[in-house]
Amino acid sequence: MSIIHKTTLTPTKLELLTAWLPAQPWYAATGRAPELSKAGGFRLDDPKGDVGIEFMVVQDASGDRPAWYHVPMTYRAAPLDGADRALIGTTEHGVLGRRWVYDGPHDPVFVTQLLALLQGRAEPQAQSVSHTPDPSVTAELTGAGSDGLAGAGPDVPAGGGSDVPAGAAEAPAVADGPDATRLVVAGGGPALEVTRVLRPESGAETTEAVRGHVTAGWQLPDGGEARGRFVVLRDAVS
Image (cartoon, rainbow, N blue to C red; front, side, top):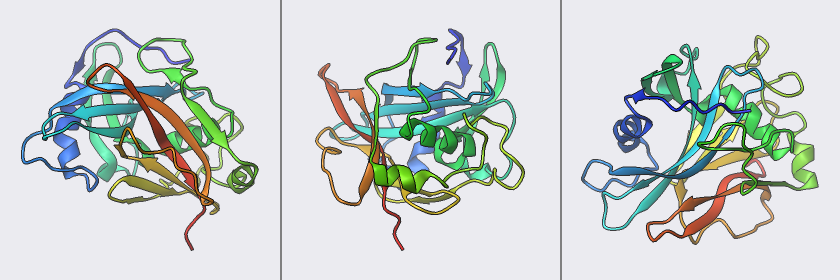
């Protein structure tokens, strides 16, 4: 299970994201530098223990009203081949040393474990506490969605992990939209949409195109909690 080290990061995750977010197509520019704070999230384990996987929600207070962004990140001890455009930055970890921080949807280990979460083979972990599952995070998959996922994703052994066989570790096809990032994984079938712009009132709608979703919560400025779909599995668009 996830081990959370109580140590320093230089620069911090929020400092990395402050520089990175304004260049993303789904970020709503306010004319000022982002004013970020952590608002929620959770983690997944890499069964091999090599790659950190975090689903982070940040609140941006630089505009007239707060905005919430969902930024899944992976943490690696070495650069990920072919993923330069997905690099958020590097940071010095007080225990683990230099870490390369990537935008999660571009990382095959992230995709593998996200699919495992949807299929009930991975358990969400608390964002900031070691060895602690987070039951507030829910994953739902319809029967049709399960069938569609059977051949999707990097071809890894049962349980996933970071040792992806040669030829299967290519990054998924990633397309950023105004509110979400769509992943078309190997094998075709349904497409994963990672919600980037979270809204307290959104995410509850159901449509025939939705085959599954991952739902979690984040904190509001008044101390309340909002919930929404962090990831949606949809029918592929032909």
